[in-house]
Image (cartoon, rainbow, N blue to C red; front, side, top):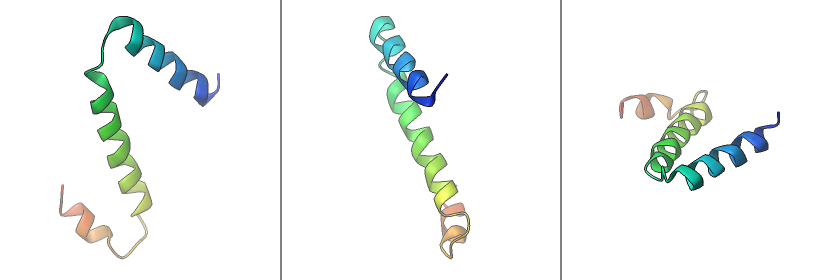
Length: 52
């Protein structure tokens, strides 16, 4: 199963079950995850960790 298929299946779940309130939660979690991964080895990492 490809990663694209998982995204399509999740989108169909949101659309058919009318669970639109889940979309912002998933989006924020993805943004935080990307922020942590991208700043892991950089000089600004200590400043990012102080936000949490």
